[in-house]
Image (cartoon, rainbow, N blue to C red):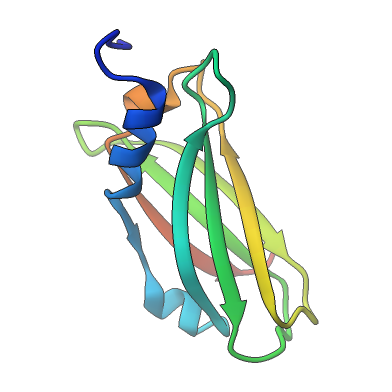
Length: 120
């Protein structure tokens, strides 16, 4: 599946441009996404780390999990990952969500969805 013509870094940039942010779900949980970025986990493979810069619009009263869903070229969900922010947090934070799928995540993922849910 990996093409020697397209580097993992180029695929990460392409995927970053195809991640939809469910801003309403973040706002409902007192969070605001500032920026989303992607990069390979290592020089050797094509697994992914999604960086999410966010801030709060108020102190979190419950745990909130920030999740990423990744879809292949047929629109099939093949991977999901997330990281939880603990209740009581207020301020700015950068999360790093690792997405690992046989060293090929960046070559399988065509688009993604980033959202926030209570719990975690």
